[in-house]
Amino acid sequence: MGIEDRKINHLEVFQKHNPVFSKTSTGFEKYRFLPFTVNNNSLQDVNTETNFLGKRLSFPFMIGSISGGVKEAYQLNNDLSKIAENLKIAFALGSFRPMLKSGKISNSYEIARKNAPSVPILANIGIGQIASGEWKNNLLSIISDLELDGLMVHFNKLQEYIQKDGNTDFSNLEYELMELIDKIEIPIIAKEVGNGFSKKDIEKLTILGFKFIDVAGAGGSSWAKVENILASEDNKVNPSFLEWGISTSESLINLTSFKDVFPIVSGGIDDPETMTKALALGAKITSSARFIYQTYFNNGVDYLENELRKWQKTLKGIMYLTGAKNINKLGNILKKNDE
Ligand SMILES: Cc1cc2nc3c(=O)[nH]c(=O)nc-3n(C[C@H](O)[C@H](O)[C@H](O)COP(=O)(O)O)c2cc1C
Image (cartoon, rainbow, N blue to C red; front, side, top):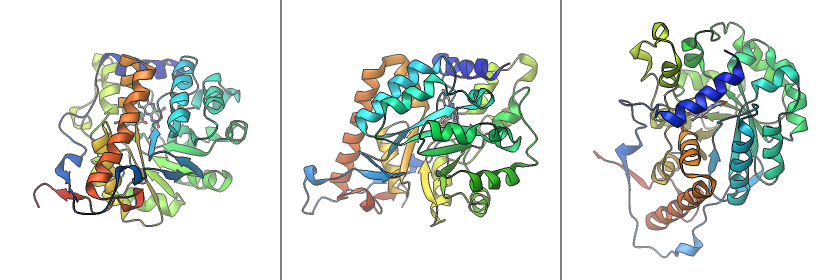
């Protein structure tokens, strides 16, 4: 199966199914907000803005990587990039593997940059293309042609392992990652795809030179389930992999102990309450993919934009009611349910 067909199949799986973890949760439900009522504040003075990759966001949110350099992604990226610009939030494009070979900039990437000049736009590539050295074909020119603000490298080892013809040779990975970090001038973000990074992983990523990490933990989309839906009867995944990984909240707590790393959180950030809890536990940017894609597909672009406006409004309301005047004051607004 070609990469383009596979990307389309992935979108179709999210249209017809809901491939999420069923036993593993993000862990954020174990926390509740601590009201702080007796203080001088006003709703209009609460400020949800933040900076990310040198640009101003209205709140700390990024549309997660969904689809990249395939023809079918054009309309999606056209619509999502307009939302990103209107709301002043970041936009991460899906994998641009299809562009690496040809070196030709796909319309679906070009349109995003054109529609969203004032917010961060990030490109996305998998460790398969890093370890194999494929990234050396054209990556530098793609980054400069599109004036990208950041590059996301997704670590999808489980997914590759499960795919029938997936990549299982990562013997060059660390060497190639170091070379990538050395050659690329824009910020590079290491990202999981919904199975979370362990403390050992994060330690290794920092040694290799990563300064930005998106934990993309377990509790939201399960890529083992996605691949299982696509696999023939003979190639179904062993059930032990369907709930594989570290929950998003646990992975975030691991990450925040590394003070020099910019913490990003995704994996099951499906509502504004969960987003705010992730920020309160130390995330500087939050991100969501499945919620974005399914809401867009089922309800349309205007509905999605309005939903995300409500996310910002709810974040502001929670900050007001917990006494946090700005994003940097979000610590200490949570309590664990059993404490
Ligand atoms: C339809 C769809 C396509 C995706 N494609 C990519 C991709 O190309 N590159 C990538 O790094 N992650 C991709 N992801 C993974 C997400 O960016 C994210 O890490 C993961 O799904 C967990 O977040 P969620 O629970 O909010 O979906 C995709 C997710 C969805 C739902």
